[in-house]
Structures are given as C-alpha cells and as structure tokens.
Length: 352
Image 1 (tube, rainbow, N blue to C red):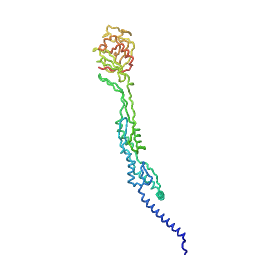
Image 2: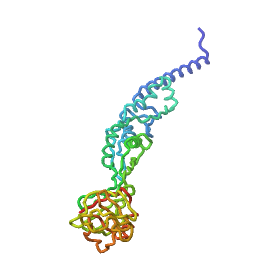
Image 3: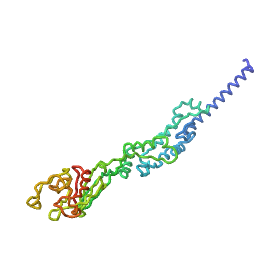
Image 4: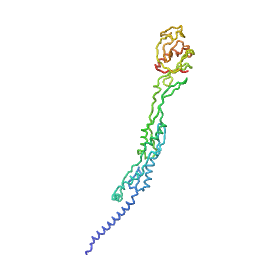
C-alpha cells in the first residue's frame, strides 16, 4: 500500500482542523441559541427603552417603567377656569404580556440558521415594540360627567318681577356647558399621542361652550312701575331705570287700581269725554276738545284697566298728591317726554 504524500497529509490535517472548528462553532452556536431563548434579542426596544439581552422578568419591569408608569400618571384637566385631577387607573389598561410577546417574536420566529447567522455576525434583529394599551371611553365619560356637574350652569334670563311693592331685577348671565363628545375625545387623545409616554406634567383643556340667555337687558324691553305710596313713575329699560317722574294718583274715594296692566293706546292731543256726568263730573262739559283747557293735557296713554291712563294736567299743584279720579297725572313736560319713550304693549305694574 502506497503511503500518503506530504501534500495529502497536509490537506487531511487542514480538513480535520476545519471540521473540528466547524463542529466547535456549531456546538457553541447551539449552546448560545439555547441559552438565548429566555433573553430579548439584541436590537429590540419599546418607548425608547432598549430591551436587548433582558430576561423576561427584567423586560417586564423595563416595560412597566417605560410604558405603564407614564400612562398611569395623573392628568391635570382644566375646564372654564376649574382644575381637576384625572387618575387613569380603571380607564387605561396596559397589556404587558402582548409587548413581551412582541419583544421575543423576532428571534422566536426566525429559523435556526437565521438565528445562528445573527449570533455569529453580531447583527441585531432591530425591532421597535409598539406600546400595547387600551383606553375605556365609557370610564372617561363617567368621570367627565362628574366634571360637568361642577362646570355646567344654565343661562339666566334678564327679568323684572314685582311682588307687593318690591321690584326685583335680575341681570342676564351666560351659562356654560361641557361638550361631552369633544371632551371625551380630547381626554382620550392625551393617552394616544407621543406625549402620553413623555416625561413631565400632562395638562388637558376641555371644550366648554357658552349658553346665551334667551332674554337680555336689550331684548326684554321696557317696563313701567307706578309706586302709589311714593307717587312716582319709574320707567325701566331692561333692568335699568331709564327715567323717573313724579305724578298724582287717585284719591281714597277714587283709588288708582293696583296690579299688572299694559299700555293699550297712545293719544296725541287727546279729547276728553265726561266719564261721570251725574257723579264727580256733574256740571262739567260732556266733551272738551284738544287744547290748553283739556283735563288730559297734551298727551294720554290708556291702560288696559278701564278708564285709567297716564295723562298731562294743568293742575301742577296736584303732582305728588292723591288728587285724581284714578289716573296718573303728570306734568306737561314729563308726559310729553314719557309719551315718546314708551310703546303700546308696554307692561305697567302699579304697586302700593
């Protein structure tokens, strides 16, 4: 048998060495692959936190610090100048198991040869795990409902009311209403943006709408209040007193009626018909046309109370006293000014 040549022996030695090295490498690769099964592969991160080489408990803790802790930070909520503190617990649920599974997925999904190639080359799998969590909008709305109870307020209409001799005025005021649909979207968005995982305080401003009153000082119009005890007429524009006038009121025998009435007729240079020719008007003309001797003066405004009116008088001395037969007498200059300021339909309150 012919002995191997030197070249053959060298080649054999090289092959043997290569096979030995390869077997050693494969053994190392196998052991390394086995040992890496419980570790997050290189190149995997979540929310800016590198999870490479972490065991499952370590990775879970890292995920809780990077995702759960920021999400569970309270949110400062403002609404119409009010400040509230929203605690996400119960409304936000973090799925740590899903993020862990995604972190391990690149290596576990790869074939054995692909894993070995990555290990030998030292190349990362490069995987950015998406934060996995959900926001319960029903819980958000429930919490916002409590906020709305403190924020919402109805609009107040301007009003003027009379009880006895007391006149009460209320100014119009806008109300406020929390828009629940938009507020839910705004609060939910605080957990669905990059800022949700960022450091620092989170502040959300909720949308609040103004509710306009149906009746304002400008739209409620004018009101006349006659104070019998003071013998004064007060003309209100909205809730503001526009003008005051002294007047004469009815005598005890012919009292001015109390109650709520309205102007039903405006008369310019009125004529006068004797209302009681057989009573207090006995001996007076049945009719007096417009002019300086007319008992109604130059202007008259009839009320819905029969026979009762505001009118002028030539008896200036009677103003401020109980001297009429039920009507409100006014000075000529006052009745003419008053006439221009009020319209038919203006309410009239006559109080004690």
